[in-house]
Image (cartoon, rainbow, N blue to C red; front, side, top):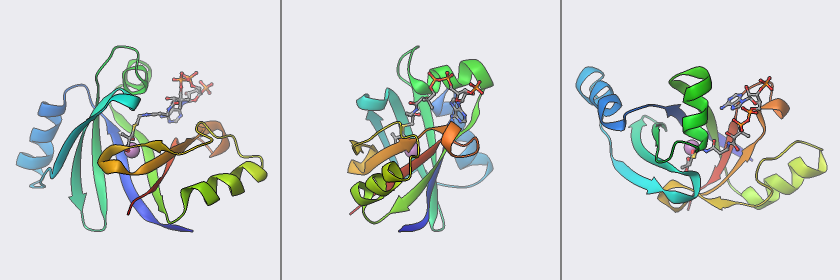
Length: 133
Ligand SMILES: C[C@@H](C(=O)O)C(=O)SCCNC(=O)CCNC(=O)[C@H](O)C(C)(C)COP(=O)(O)OP(=O)(O)OC[C@H]1O[C@@H](n2cnc3c(N)ncnc32)[C@H](O)[C@@H]1OP(=O)(O)O
Ligand SMILES: [Co+2]
């Protein structure tokens, strides 16, 4: 079951500069920062009520965030939905013929289990599913 929007993933060129906008201008607070090597990103999480903003800076010129910015500029790169059982959800989507980027859960920020669905299968949005303890 999908529970809520877990986070909105925003691709930025410079994490420090973007953090400054969210903290100093919007008055929000970054609570966690982490490098996720598997995704070639450095992330900062900003809670906003029941969901979070995830700022993403690429750690390499060839990662998904670098490629996204190259094509589109900075902006919303994905929407992440919280699910209670990721493996079960992926099996269901697979049986429905939905194009998955990740057929098995990967390790995301904060130790979450994550998997991406292809934007061509979702009416144009890169969707992340995530399960947290
Ligand atoms: C840390 C973790 C966490 O939360 O814990 C994260 O979030 S990591 C977040 C970063 N990691 C990821 O994004 C991993 C999953 N992403 C990927 O595997 C890739 O970025 C893909 C989504 C498959 C795109 O790959 P690539 O750029 O090589 O493909 P491409 O440029 O040929 O794109 C294929 C088609 O999808 C579209 N497309 C590409 N990226 C898109 C996006 N972010 N949102 C919507 N559409 C997108 C392109 O415009 C193109 O459409 P047209 O053919 O019509 O032109
Ligand atoms: Co994410």
